[in-house]
Amino acid sequence: MKRKLISSGSTFEEKIGYSRAIVQGDWVFMSGTTGYDYKTMTISDDIVEQTEQCLKNIKNTLEEAGAHMSDIVRVTYILPKVDEFEKCWPILKKYFGHIKPAATMFSADLANEKMKIEIQVTALKA
Image (cartoon, rainbow, N blue to C red; front, side, top):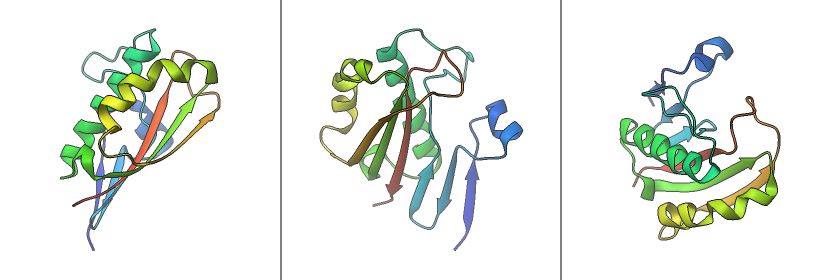
């Protein structure tokens, strides 16, 4: 089974030694993904906009892996401020409402104080 490494081009990946995603057979294991717009290397101050950008980044990475959003079977949300999670729900429902992956949310500090949400997914290609 061939293993494919996918990079977003983020400097964190090289400095820390990880990949945006690993494709192993039909599985795609994606690292925690934040709301950075990698084209402009900017991040919004708004958690809703960050959530939308996280999911765009995830969608783009899945496409590079030969997978689709509908292939996601597991999602983990990490937020520094639990009370902001409900603001994200409409965006999460937009992307996951029809596929309903297994999900977990927990609160933890993130690598940069600008980051308000990080989303990690696992997908099984259909």
